[in-house]
Length: 113
Image (cartoon, rainbow, N blue to C red; front, top):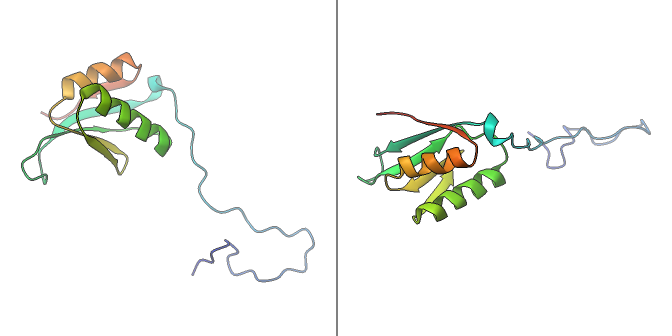
């Protein structure tokens, strides 16, 4: 069982130089858009018959992913969300989103049929 303070079971140490080990995964920085390989595809499965445009393959911080998702939703004039490392935009906006991503410098391509 993991302790809240990250002590890994250490309660007391007689070593005066002892420090608790650093825990937690450091958040990676987001690579430049030219180093990102994004896939844009339309999905209709398990969505109650609704069509969504999915953007996957983003690597970087969660806040940068949220920012990109917010901009895409705004530029397309529709709703959407960011879940599990993917941006989901309501409706079939694959071509418009592809244009926007390429203008921003991302390496993006259509995926799927």
